[in-house]
Image (cartoon, rainbow, N blue to C red; front, side):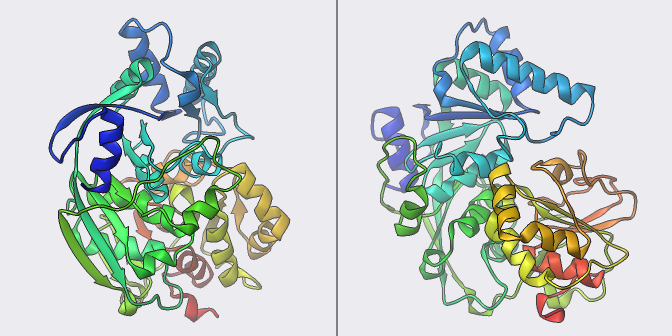
Length: 413
């Protein structure tokens, strides 16, 4: 059996195989300030009175927070009141952060779990060897009511990353390179398994980055095998017992030699339009965003600081830094990272998804270009439809902020 089949078999209560449509019990249901209000209304429309288990449902306002207007404030008010009424876990502003960084750090997602979230990047939790996938708000409402979800069991493609990583290359570059290789539908409705010697040496932040962007290849979920790194991360975090599953079979295997991979940049308007940073030439930029559920962890901020320390942001560039949770913000402050960002000329935002979806805290105007450590660069993703977003790792983003154009970290160090 594949890892996906093993986990879903446990949740269904019998052995299941790829392409079966099953009803499976969930361990956690997630929704945010865009999707939770819709799920709440659907829950009420179906006659729901009580959720199946408030301790297994989490609401995280993070997309338009701090609330940018009356509508976003009303959405969060609805979430807050429903959560209090139903005993749902609710992370208020100042105590939470961006959902896909927050939940793992809080020990709410564990190996072997089935997690469904009303957000497409729920697949992030596969770095913990959980089956995690995004669903629509109507499906989230059903899961909130009954504690189960229908799924088609996915087939599995295993990616084996061999060799070594060159300087300034990390998890973001590996996943961008992979998406460039297979395309945005290359893993459509499959489970992507990221394995091999290179993966085993990645820290958890880089692993979360890779599984976060599995959806950009069309995958149903992404997995990284449970190992000592996973176990060390969960020590002191896990809020309950867990039993990890070993890797099993795979329907397809793709090997990738990492030794020649340079820092990658996904150019407009697709995460698959990937090129090595050296090939891009003189592309001037107006804004850089370092953060998001993809690259807003403490390790990401440290990587950016390695490039920015002692330097200044280009006068034509706005640099926006967004630690992914308030705990990460606090840790970055304690380590002196925030001071370095401010000295360089950056603005440091509270945790929010705002710029990533063109919501607030960094929206692009017509004709503007941004380098971002986010996960999508479709037309209009970060603002005006005639703006452009280039996806890159935190070091490339920091170097670009200094140079005023897309740049390799070596150019400024």
